[in-house]
Image 1: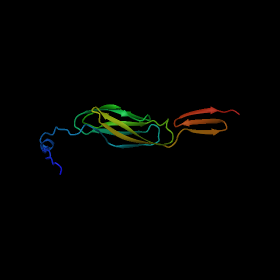
Image 2: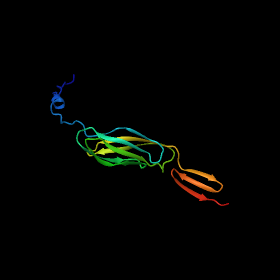
Image 3: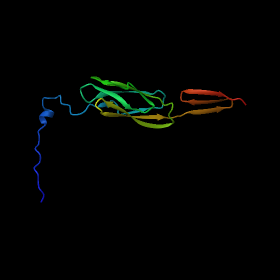
Image 4: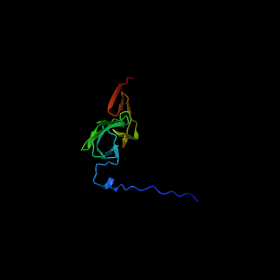
Length: 151
């Protein structure tokens, strides 16, 4: 037969959690998004806005620590105060081939907490080339180049 130890004494924490001292914060400050998943279409310069908020009452400092190269965000760091903060997301797809892209943007608070925003990007066309007997036109989304051909 094994030796049975007495269980440790229980401590009542109800006064700490539910008592009058409501200044006790149990979680670390985190960033929360108005949208957790952003869908961007295949138009050059697509933009989208989300708002950042926080899980605590105090102001928190934040910065973007990871982002795909075809996504630009404004601003890239700052302080979230009493009101949510708007972030603009821009898509720069000129170097992307046709397809679907899914990447994460990481926002880090001053205490090291990371919140992740998922971004899906659709690119329905890549660089295009057309040919007629007198000229060759090569387009890559918005940029164009025309080369004259002589027989």
